[in-house]
Every structure is written in C-alpha cells, then in structure tokens.
Length: 66
Image (cartoon, rainbow, N blue to C red; front, side, top):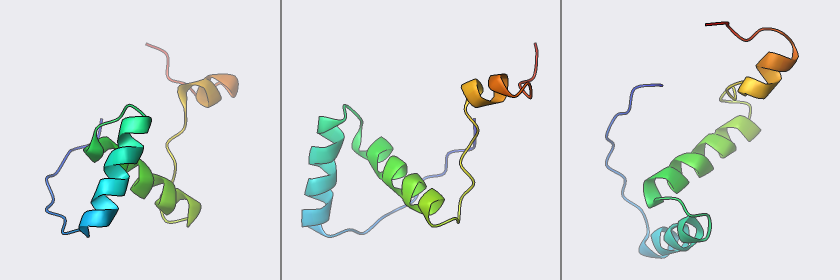
C-alpha cells in the first residue's frame, strides 16, 4: 500500500456538502470519496497510471506467486 500523507484542503462549502452526499450514497468516507474522484479524474486525463487489478494480472499470467 502506498504512503498516506495528510494534506489540508480549502474547498467551497457547497462542493464539500455535495461530496459528502455522494460519499454517503456510495458508503464511503468523505476522504475516500475525494481520493476516488481525484484518482478517477487523473486516470481519465492520462496523468495517473491506474493500478492493475489482481484479476487482470492473473489473466495474463503476470501476477506474482507467493
């Protein structure tokens, strides 16, 4: 798992309330929802390589064996 680093974020109250409602709908914490949305936006913009899922690694035989 990657290192977690605290980061102060100033955000518009209405945006924060919308994120909290979305997090509640998805049964996530607000912090996890913000990370999810940021990671998704970065991946879609081609600025963050999406981690390979275990299933896709197993399918092509690249998964490390214990």
